[in-house]
Image (cartoon, rainbow, N blue to C red; front, side, top):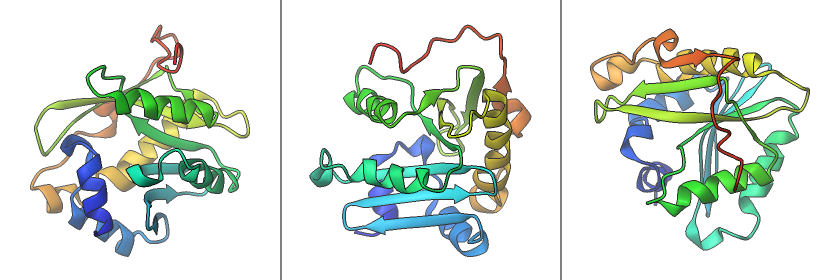
Length: 191
């Protein structure tokens, strides 16, 4: 099965980029956007000078529980840069959301409680709320993570969006918010 089909079957439509968008990123932004693919995994990520952004991480059901996800995350950690990713909030009707969060917690990721992220899906036209997780090897602050997330949004998520989807995503300043006084619940607590 093609790598895009694996991702498309696993991730909800509102989180997926189009195949054309992702292939264009791999071709035209090959300096920063990468694919690590194996028989049982697909890892799509952006590597910039001072951080990594995991766009998609898929491990096949056949390989889950065998440490493959851990090995992929360790490979990213070896680069010595903060790692950022987006996750769905816990959905009690979808046990995979809690499993994903437990996995990232075991891998040492933290919840960026100061960062709000609500993006309108161009596929469904609905607001998709995500949480930002990060791994910080050098004590980077949530403000540093926020700045990196805005850069990711502009360089990756909205890259040629009008060409691929017929309209543009909302600007980063409307999608991402930062409130260091926010009293948001840590989604990694009680897992």
